[in-house]
Image (cartoon, rainbow, N blue to C red; front, side, top):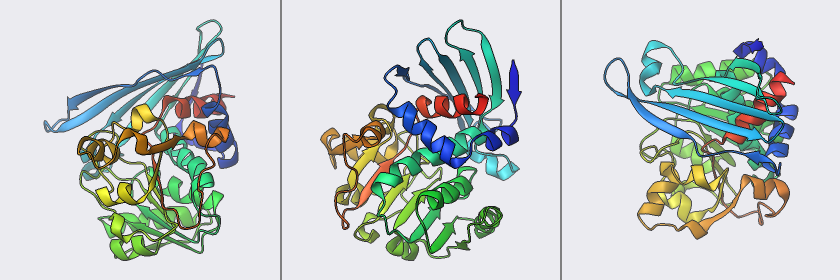
Length: 309
C-alpha cells in the first residue's frame, strides 16, 4: 500500500492534468457516485460540526471513498475548516492501493472543477477576478481560474484583511499578482469572474450588483443553511451545477427553490452536460452565468486516481 502526504498529492496534481482528469471522469459511462452521507457532530465546545463520507467507483477498475470533517470554528485555532482523508482500492480485486491526506486533494479538485465550468461559462475576454474567502481553497481558486483565463486584475476579499493578505502572498509565490479587496460590493460590481469559497450562512454577493456578462462561481456552501449569494443572483443568471443531486441541497439553490424563487427547471445543465457538449455553455456576452459546486465523489475519484497513477 502506498501513502501520500498533502505535499506529495499537490505535486501529483498539476492543473492541466487535473482539469483533464476531471473532464474525463465527468463523462465516463462506468463512473458511479452514490449519494454522500452526512452527519452533524458536536465539536469540543458543543457547536455543530459535520462528518461526510463520499464513495465513488469505476466498475472493474477503481473504488474510492473520502471521509471529510467540517469544523466551522477551526479558524480560531489556526486549523483548516475542512480536513479529509481518502482510500483508493483496486476495482478488479478489492485490494487497497493507497491512502492519502485529502486536504490538498479536496482544495485542488474543488477549485479545478470550478475552472472546468469557467472554461465554458466565463467570457473569453474576462479580465477581473474576485476571490471571496480566505480558506484553504482560496489560493487554489485564484491560481486555477488564472490558469484558464488571462486576468489583468485579481482581488481577494475576506472578513479578516490579514488573512486576505496571506492568500495574496501565497498566490504571488506561484506567479499570480493580486491585491486585497477592501470594498466587497464595489469589487463585485466590477468583476468578470467571482469565485466564492466561504462558509457563509448569509449572502455575501448581491445579484443586483452583477454586471452583464459576469460569471459567479459558488463553492463554499454544502448544506441548506449555508448561503453565499442572494435571490437576485439566481433570478438574473443562467444556473449551472456540478451535479443536480448535490447542488440542490446547498443553500444557494435549496433556499430559493424552497421559497419558489426558482424551480428545478431553471437549472440549465450540469458539469457533465457542459463537458460532453450537450449544452454549449455561455450563449451571449451579456449573459450572467451562475455555477454552484457542491462537490461530487467523481471529482475526488479523478484526483485520487491521478495522484496514485
